[in-house]
Image (cartoon, rainbow, N blue to C red):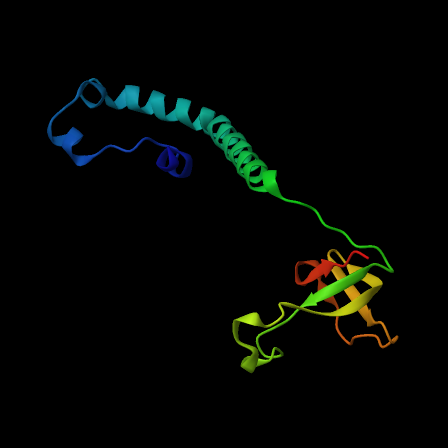
Length: 139
């Protein structure tokens, strides 16, 4: 329980104090001291097992999340299209406006999933683009 991991003792609810239960009624001061020292000895093991359960849960969540991920990479020289943003698209075109623009070539790989682009005329764009904003163009 989270309470026992933090405070190294089990929680006792007020109704157990007023109406004695078997767990609370059979407890004497000496037995309580023995149980407290025993729980202090095992608190490290309890925390370690909780940490192991938490790590396995995180791994299973990550495995489930990453199950359907498609890793896309581009090489230098690949032809790509760039996504059109709201501020650069023609507002008068309506719903038939293009979602992808230009024909660009990958000039260099900047980082993990970031690419520097170059127009077909040889002009290098001033900022790198993330792969989620690019679509590979096949000739």
